[in-house]
Amino acid sequence: MVEIQNLSKRFGRFEVLKEINANFKSGKITAIAGPNGSGKTTLIKIILGLVKADSGKVYVFGEPINGVCSYRQKIGYMPQIANYPENLTISDIIKLIKELRNVRGNIEEKFIREFNLENDLNKPIRTLSGGTRQKVGAVLSLMFDPSVLIFDEPTVGMDPVVSSRFKEIMLEEKQKGKVIIITSHVMSEIEELADEILFLLNGKVYFSGLISELLNAQNETKLERAVAKILENQTILDV
Image (cartoon, rainbow, N blue to C red; front, side, top):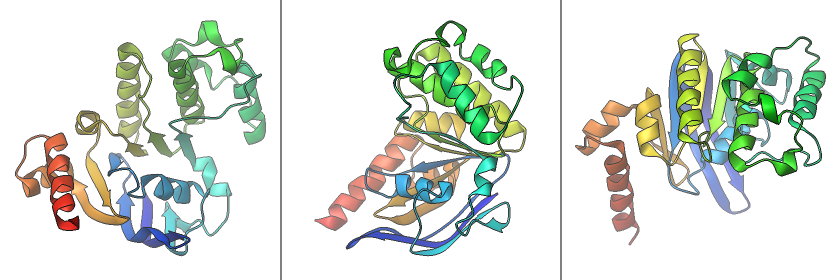
């Protein structure tokens, strides 16, 4: 489990996160959703240790991160846009990451097959399409069998076949009891995959719980419409 307690973060005068509390549970897929600027990316970066919170705590399986980076071995992260060295090949990137983690063996082969990357392994990153880069990110996030998986807009740029298989893999990883966190602007994708949703609005937790509970609270049957209603009401309040 990944637990967030009273987490706050400010950049200058802008308070990005305000007293955030959340639990990301093992064996569950939890979606972090909210409009642009709501704090989703900052929250993920704090969990990853890339940004330091001003106050509050993050616990990964009961252990506070406290600036210690060893816990990252338990996390697989797939960013929306990954910046790999453009001159390296896919094989080079995989080899480099394995060396950094001091891991031997061919642990990546299963996922190379899953994402049909066999014929692309020796191509430089600069020659790859956005969708193929996404597949590389998926392999890198999954191949070390981490206990926590964080996917940031994972299916953007993927073709329907690859996207469908990726979602199947995500559900298989969930069945293994892993903590899975996703962000997506596609509400139908969240409905398809997620058990729970953490909805952020203006840096605060607007809702945390089952998607069905959010739908009931908004008297809607579709998540897209429920979210639209939340944002419409917020706009009225801001006027």
